[in-house]
Length: 290
Image 1 (cartoon, rainbow, N blue to C red):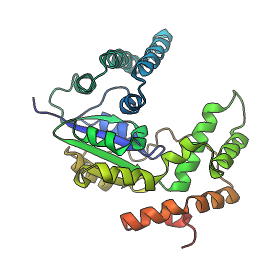
Image 2 (image 1 turned 45 degrees about the vertical axis):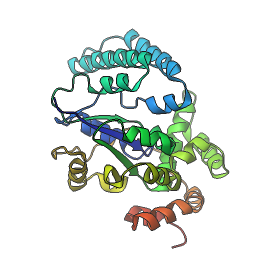
Image 3 (image 1 turned 90 degrees about the horizontal axis):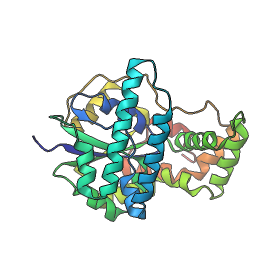
Image 4 (image 1 turned 60 degrees about the horizontal axis):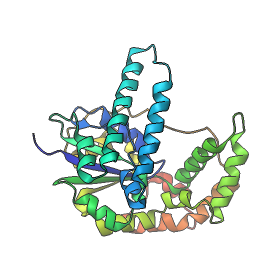
């Protein structure tokens, strides 16, 4: 059996990684487990692998307690997820690189690619990224960038939805979260869209030939997907281009919010334009001072 290509999907958060996971999961040359985000390396970096195992065990117990769906496809997906959660718990109990790779590759057969798509990995230090790049003979990284204002607002809506009480209107909560971000709070949201910091770390740690940078706004075309497949070394396959995954609550920004966010994010637009040499039209329409 030939060694598989190891793919790390690094983000950005709310920039199409769930869609990418589903596309690759269905690709006949790719082998992805049922858990999209393993969070192995951020847990390892923080010294909390045992906590990660406790969390996956609790999640598995909660899923096992739910009724088995009557629909056969959903029931099979549930059974697969339960098995993969048990396997991942066992890998975390071993707690080493070999266990991680064994988990990714279990059941691969002759498929050419295995993957861990965890957007939090974009926040890892360059030293950890270098270690990840050396884990196999063929390691590749994908990082997707989304228009900074659109990404920020999507992230804010997601956090507002998570924090909201049942029946609570999301608009006021989302506005409060956005206001805190623009004043320097909610640092975890800002960090996920700090392209200047993330790309600087990626370029410092990863061979450019092993790093695919793509714009979310250009991802949903067959030609873009074919280019990605070429980078990954798998054959092109038709994509469900109209499907959006985890789109989040439907809540629009006001013109004032949009202008404030664009001004706050201006350094991100400037950095990407300078370093990548261009911006998609959707980015240009949001960019201020140009």
